[in-house]
Image (cartoon, rainbow, N blue to C red):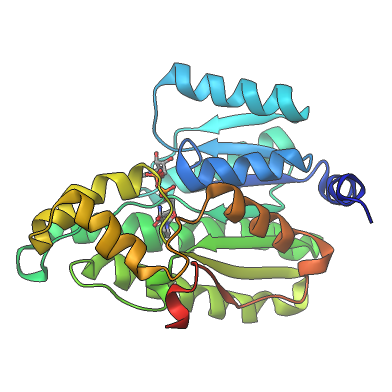
Length: 272
Ligand code: NAD
């Protein structure tokens, strides 16, 4: 099968489905929104950003791929906002077929000085938000006997690094949530998986370079070479396009038997 036939096949298969992608105004979430849109999926965009930038993203996806988008300003630390986002998706698209729990934040600091408010925010946005979004869409996915829930976890769902206590705890929690809900959904045509990326050069990682330099007493150049890329045997950052492509595969029929998995896409990091 040629490349274009295979892309058309995915488009035919998923065209007209509706997805929520949390945290899709930037980085990995935006890459995933783009991959889904390229397959004809209508997308609920979410995340922070200025109105003009968000309007530009919506226009780009709609004009490039002939799909529809809406934007939800839901704050992922607020359960009521998450329920409202799912309701807005149903009002516009009639359903939610695909849920991508991607929004996340990071803070790098030694545990003894780690601000409790940062701990609470990381657990709320990186872990509890996924629970609230899943419970908001699970009934309709079960009723239609089709659904895809993909949680963007991290290599830090599988292994730890120092100075990231809240993030590592939240991401390990996401891996556990994924397994439990996958078992509940297994007979209902709904797959639930975690994607576990290594380092991707997004604003989230750019921000932690100076924080890590401070926590470890290194220069920023040393952090990139000796900490970030040192973790990945390929010595390459993972790209948002690669994560978008893996997400898309999990949404197809070919991905239907993959459920409850924590899939590394980390340049060999967690093979060590
Ligand atoms: P990013 O900072 O580029 O994007 C984060 C997105 O989440 C943005 O759209 C932001 O507006 C949104 N967001 C943050 N707080 C929010 C809130 N309270 N409510 C709604 N939206 C909110 O980061 P990224 O690197 O693209 O990270 C996306 C996900 O991927 C995160 O869960 C992160 O933990 C995970 N991840 C990132 C890497 C990496 O190296 N960048 C590696 C592994 C996992």
